[in-house]
Length: 160
Image (cartoon, rainbow, N blue to C red; front, side, top):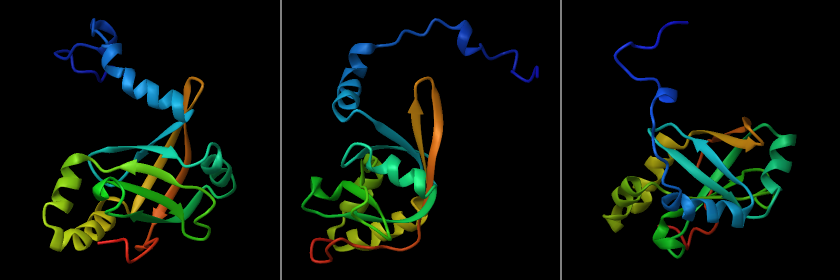
């Protein structure tokens, strides 16, 4: 289309070294879990998701491409920084687990008296629409769009 700015070098014209040693922890996690997913939320960040059980999410997403989910967290798990996404109508069908970006987690949990309120605000602001992507062979495909409409705690006594 000829719209690339002439003053900006094209990515394919640059010799950008890749530090595979720095990537090795991510690659090791990917190998261990067999499959990881990328999610785009309503914010300036991506989420790296892993399944509780291999194939559960794909099986469910193939049947229900768009569905409502609940997002859960507990202070007992990773000091509240690891959250879980499950389908609202069948929480045992799959679980996608992710760790909050540090800036968001720090904001939520620096004030323990406000952590539950702030977590709900983050859910409503950033996680009301989440699009999950899956890489298959050499193609990245949309697996499902999930929509979170309300907080659905796993165990209210665990949550703050």
